[in-house]
Image: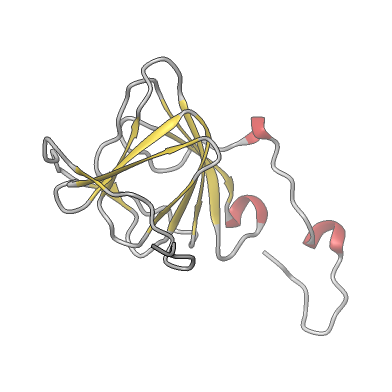
Length: 160
């Protein structure tokens, strides 16, 4: 959205920081059954060119439908609750994340978010690497017993 010419001094009042109040999120974004998305940072709302950010809420005990976001990378930050992620061609892998955890979802990975708690909502912040609201809902039932995948930090492996 920037209209600043190269070499010109920007008007930082209109070309600078944008604050989107929590009660001003936009629910008019593609949805996946079982969750509610609301957009905060988009090109139309803030002038962002490379990022999309918003919130996701999943009701107690609920699960989303399987989906992916095309070539976009996604980061999910868990604010409150416990997320159980399933992913893979048959949703054959699983891991859980609590408040304060980050979840990275690479491009084209079929995945499903599950609220692992029956007594409170799962509340998250989502950031994607692009502006297009790509949500490809998939018809995947998933296997009955997915394999639990533990976190291993490849940048800081433990000495054993």
